Amino acid sequence: MNIIVLNGSPKGDLSATLQYVRYVAKKNPQHEFSTLHIARDIQKIENDPQRFAADIDQVAAADVVLWSFPLYYLLVHAHYKRFIELIWERHATAAFQGKYTLAIATSIHFYDHTALQYIHTVCDDLGMCFLDDFSADMQDLLDTDKRHRLLMFADNALRTAAQQRPTFQIPQPALVEPSPYRPGPAPSAPSAVDSGDKRVLIITDAKDPAGNQAQMVSRLQASFGGQAEVVNLQELRIETSCLGCIQCGYDNCCPLEDRDDFIPFYRDRVMTADILIYAGTIRDRYLSARWKTFFDRTFFMGHIPNIKGKQIGIVLAGPLSRNPHLRE
Image 1: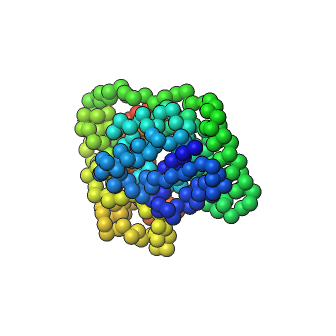
Image 2: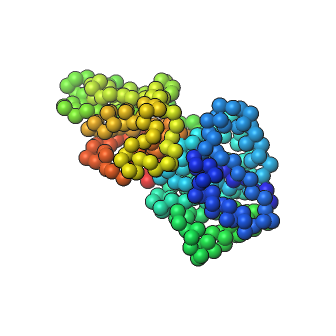
Image 3: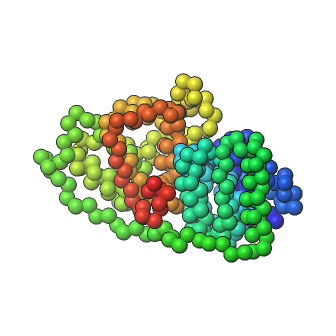
């Protein structure tokens, strides 16, 4: 069979996850494995319609689609997320429909189930035949028993695809058209929430000023009597998501610090706020790739509890009840 690998690591060929895929390919020479470096090349894919079309053509020609990705902040990398958005934006879903598919992820087993459930639901929304997923630790390839488990997983999944056996789908599709939000009148002083000396920061990624998210943010800001600051991620210059280089591990300094607005914004406005409210819209089972970029880039602080003690609020537009991985 012809198996197309969608590599979700920004490191490209150096991806640890990709080494698991290559091990499977080495042990299954009867199948042909080809790799598309989705996360690494997302800017080319997004900005060059011919490149996007060529990648989609390879997916359409494949017998099996293999999603290969490391976990970044409880999910796939933001660039991978953006590619998934492009599939719908550019009406390329037909290339995926009916394809057998499986997923291999690497992590330290911290919320890997949410990332795999996300990919599973995306595949179901695309009308794909989801076979199975495999969640590996970063060091599992060095263990004989765990390599054996990986090969058993691949053998079972690929045999099912070769024999055209049926698969099961998650029965609850996402709602495409949410009900419009119509805000009521904002409270006037003194009914508005008095935040006192507490600094309130509302972060949004709304593009449509008439959309549900923008309307909710406007109403929420009015509830604070206009005292809450609103920052739209669309208006920040954020060049890229996390590169996965881990150079920040030594002193929390990111090599991207001087390239865009993100780290000054995070240090000077997010970390200094007393109350943080995140506002987003559910897109293909998660928030937008812009929000995912925000979350990924916060990793420059490592595991330091840099928002400890802050009050956190979340405002979502979309079918949260149909996305348990996001709810969790």
